[in-house]
Length: 632
Image (cartoon, rainbow, N blue to C red; front, top):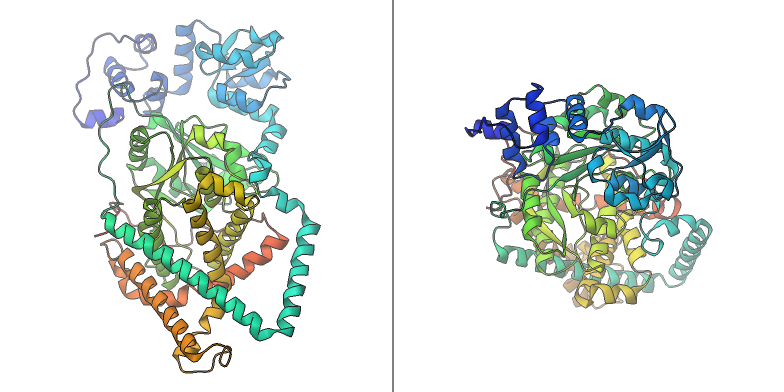
């Protein structure tokens, strides 16, 4: 709860002299009133935030006044932005990521004196061992945090850029696949040539084997989805109850939100508006808008917007690969929060989402390293493709994924509305910059190291991809990333088995191999419709007719199961208008096959190519939505 909320609630602060030295200084200087000082201190008792952050976030004092008052209170020198520009950064071998985390910038000022600039000079004692003897004893001076970070970014650009691309350990990264071009091409063309030769010599046998594998993976997929669906139904309402009040001495934590942007000029203003609706105390919000260095259009668009003090831009130096995970790896070191969340540019989250996440992390055991929210679409009525996409997401995030989590399986994460304990995220090396579904990969890396992911009943509305070819491009990127994730984690199957255990290991195989096989081999499965229609099938005369009829019936049964899951997923009040469209999902899912073939091609020729999804083309989100998770 912020100061404005306290005022609306009729809080009656004391008008006595404030106890905090900074508050006293600000009141004496006429920058804030005693009432404002008392309200800020009331907020501070519930929020793990310095008083000056509270006052700046609430708009009660500007950064310049606060910096001057703090310098006088601390009795220390301060450096302005201009002073920092005139100073020379110290040439150190120290990892700049450690300096960013410690919030210190060693430099030589314009008078030739060695100093350590920091937003909190009174707290840098623990960081001094990071510095060589000549600098460890240098005096600390007060400087704006963002200027300190900007100075480190300029002086260590190459190091930070390279670290972002290789943050994940090589055995767990997809980057080795990308570098072995000749080997990749040789294996691919050799395999295709062998398959073509065998098919030419034994066409019926090859078709039979492929059909057998397609049917097997169809059964596996159906069993997993049905099990998850029934488990989800048995659990009842997924939405969590309102978070309890904080325990004594347990204030709300600081939360950093990463928002990667690339050529998002159309929705920049809408994004700021939507994020401003978040009810989490603004003094504890650290929204980082991640921009690519070469994306000058988005930089110019944001430069024309007066960003609130709790929102800032971080520019990622251009490099390879140009992917979302590389950008997030770079920005991670600039974050201030102990919880890291991710939003996409077009997201419209529940206003109370971050509060629910913060409280749940406070209640959960330390091995719960990730909370995954529910994704939904605000333009579901736009056209048939948007309706089907919404049905698919409703089934996945409201039925299948919660069921998988309750079954104790490791789950692939969504790329947004996902929150991490920062400690665990850094321990695992962040995201694999070379995997175009970094979210799915990270979900299983968390499981490999003993961490758990929980679903949480909070919703973020997104923009459904409502045009055919952009949909195919987006889905092909996802499927390519699934292929990459399986290849990476299966480099050492025995190690993976030991880390995950048998249940999660086979769940991993069922999820990836079966799902990918279903997309790639869908035309083989479609052939069984010939049996149901009384038409000749390629396996007539090879497989007994009764078996073919059974397989055709199995195919029909799986379609019915899918239809039941889709219907249950959209039976609530938010999606009831989609019930009549669920039968058309039979014509929607084949689009994934086209995307799968595109994904296989790119896996060979452009494994880290990020096929950008353009946003801002759809209907605007409805206003006044309650945003709750509804399964009624």
